[in-house]
Length: 41
Image (cartoon, rainbow, N blue to C red; front, side, top):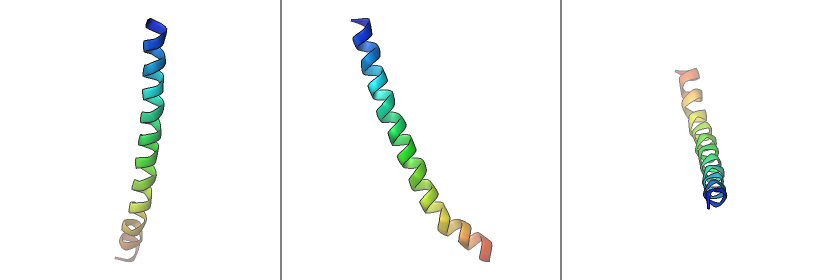
């Protein structure tokens, strides 16, 4: 029972990592116009 719980937790963490990575990538994309605007202001 314990190994199954650990396996489930590991799968959830993998999904969480992908989500966090995806969000951080989106943040980078959204920050590009902000950085450009800051550079020219």
